[in-house]
Length: 68
Image (cartoon, rainbow, N blue to C red; front, side):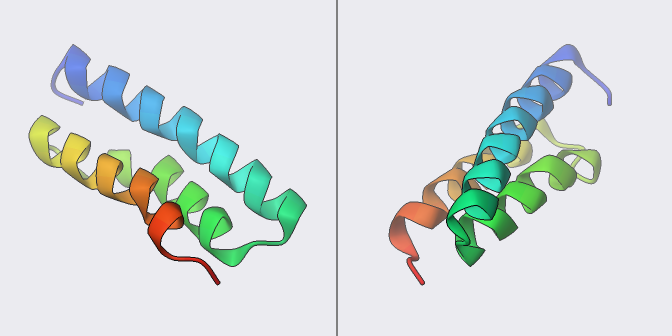
């Protein structure tokens, strides 16, 4: 992690990811479960802060638009 912003955005999206994961596990919903796992893991691989936020927002919005 290069900057404090990346650390804090990663923490925020990881926390949201834990919420999605627990919700998906409890409701047996595949999309929130998968998005939760991806939200917890992807901040480790993205070095650009703007890209981190853009991908995070897209992943947070994904379960709203994709329902299985």
